[in-house]
Image 1 (cartoon, rainbow, N blue to C red):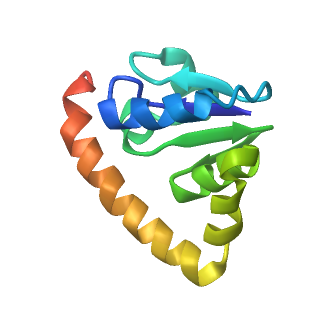
Image 2: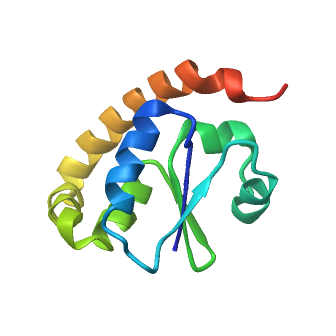
Length: 115
């Protein structure tokens, strides 16, 4: 599984650094900052990659709240989040708030994009 994240965003980096400490061998952490390979592997442009966390599992690309569920499912320490937030009504609420936070972080970090 590959996780595509923005390492130059302080908040994103801090969260991913927590996950990296779990040392899950089957997770490859891919920084999307100036990474043409990430755009090719995901078929997402730089703006889309900057806007949300993405996960590639097999040939499937998931973004946003769904990506976090897949990630947490693989991590024993965080699997409780998966078990709670996968419930349909709770997932809808989680997804809504994720999009708000992701939107704010995107606007904070969009200066990274090359026009």
